[in-house]
Image: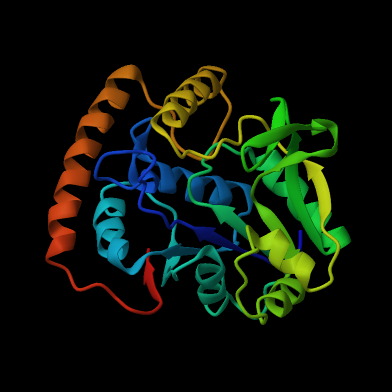
Length: 271
């Protein structure tokens, strides 16, 4: 495997999730969602540089929360007003020696190591690769007060990690921001690079709503009962309950501590 770096984008205020705690900091199986995402990449890509982009107002909170869990080493950078700006800021912190760069949603904590390596291998061969899954729901395109059916066989739902040759991603992000950029693949595609599609995973869920969190809990329980290693320690039921209680206290304490902490405005690190 070529030398890799990973950008984990963990923005968002969690409005669709409800409550006061952003979705990336919610507990999943007793561990913060973001910590699980970081652990997945640390396990799948040993030695890869991990860079997490967070809103400035969330950095102190995350440092305080992460200190209470066994989180893999990572660098923190301040995110921007949109995903595009967060990724661009993170690119400045990436080791120039990196040959492949993955960009990952902070709230996709259940992708397998096989998926991560599969997309990375495809990017090494094609220059840019993203995981996709077939659309299972019927779709309709809305036009004012009318709508029409859309042929779903021609559509795919896009996931992360999205992986690119470093020079491809860096060149693409030299462009000016455009509201049509919905993900990193759209930025790279605009620069003239063809994006290769590879098989994603249904379980590679993006946690956005309370219902998503419930589904993720069920998927995680099934995975751990089946003995699959996701890069985090398996827990007994008693340990899991204790972790949930400790985590609830941690998020509350972290919120209070963050209010009194100075928030960095540039890149920092947490180990």
